[in-house]
Image 1: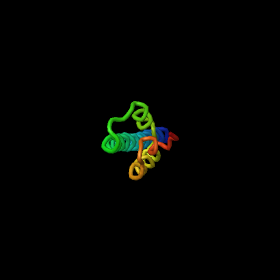
Image 2 (image 1 turned 90 degrees about the horizontal axis):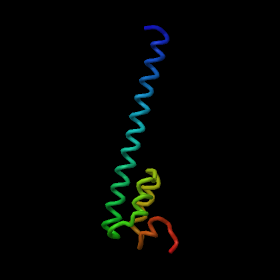
Image 3 (image 1 turned 120 degrees about the vertical axis):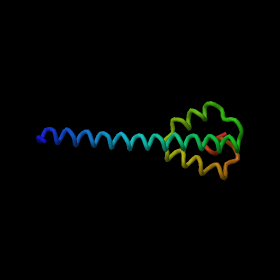
Image 4 (image 1 turned 30 degrees about the vertical axis):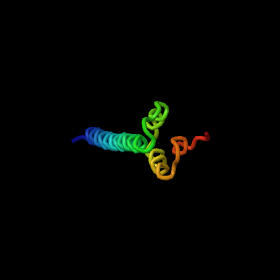
Length: 84
């Protein structure tokens, strides 16, 4: 194997690894969003589309914070830190 072939193969392996990591992260976000939506629906009923959109575009850290707030929130606005 030539030096160029070696570096090409290294680049391919790194690209595959990065792709797998991104896929896992995306999967965690999608699962977290789906779980949060289910929990909110159980607690507060059907969700307005504005909340569904916010949940769908949130990162896993934000989803986790919102999920924790379900335990003490009295309203959807409390979960999303909105002033009513």
